[in-house]
Length: 546
Image (cartoon, rainbow, N blue to C red; front, top):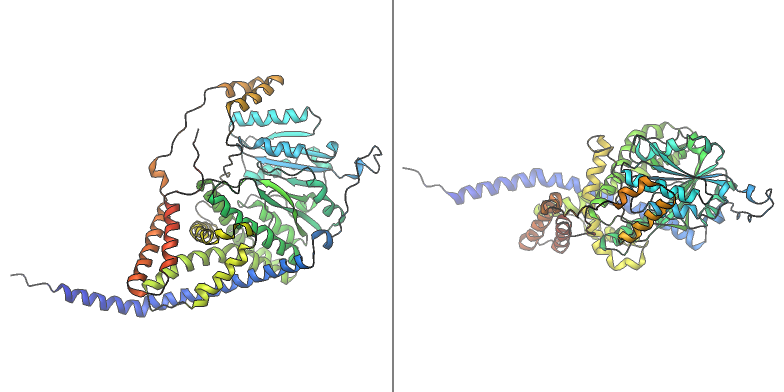
């Protein structure tokens, strides 16, 4: 005869064992994690305060770049070649692109309308497109502008070796570039104002120690959806605070890959473009800085561009922006330490402020502290987090980071929740970069929508231009039947990582309400909602695939 099983006794034993494990093993480990996260939070806090103070000093004392460096306006273009056109240096302009059907005309048109003598600039459209229709359209656009007297070349490669870095490197090898002193780089969706070169090149002409002039991005679709508004907040802080502080205090910041002008000789001296990571722009900036060069950020010069408005495009972009720097840090740390050309102070800034705090600790602390440690501290009540660490310091950091976009201050809370969700992707990408595994060198061009209202009539205008130039090979594909929209399957709408995190945060919030009563449930429920919203892909715009 089976003996009666004492379920209550078993439950009590299991509860006792779990409490012993929780108190003696789990709680001490969690306390260590709390301590590490608090230290990183304080490090980030100090860095944000320092950057904010530098920018405050710059603003109060009006220490604009024109005041810190010599800057003189370009001479007017006159018939006297000695004092007119020939006083303008030769400038190379590179526009790298890859299947940029929606936006290729934007950058080409803007660059061709720059207020600079046409015989003193060479335009290279570095087209790695694999779509023959797009490639023909880009070539046609270049022919149109060449027929108007511009020195514009449509450069096509047989392969995508090195991706953007490879295209830029190959472009520099052309014979026509040998007379150029400076190179301006614009991605396909960037639209510089006509006075861009006249406001940036003088810094390079009159200050031989300056290698790079970086300008600010201005977003044409910031108000398209909530996701683009929150991207604007993050990037405005990056430009207005981080880049301004780096330029003013250290004459260094990471090149953003576009909307900047380089001194060509410094690119060569630093070893040229390298494709060892997906952040070739940052790679070149670090190597140039280690050669003793200075960078200047000119925030008053703004270049219009487009933010990714679909979550998939934004996700791919953030993977590259997080994985690449971590991978570069791994590959360059010994090179930075061994460098003899720059001061220990600058090397410390590169390793600690720029790489460790900005590219690693920020992602690590955000995800582990706010998405793992805080909810675990609810489930493991023996682990306490001081109020200053869980509330005061994070609030101050958030306020400091929100000053870049005052008009969006009312979006601070959803912005913080969104950034916490994205930290999941960023920490995965940074880990991939540090370990040099998986998708470490994956380069997926950020999808750009351009004028989403483009109609058949506008395409007919392009076809008419093609007929005028007798470029028959462009016409046939454009007149073909368009494919019907392909709608996404319901399975593709789910992001499982975010959904599981949403369940975890919600469970912790419910446990806090029912048992622990630490008061974290409001944050935990809001954060779980943010994970669910993104997990079910209810963010960004939705586009049809043709």
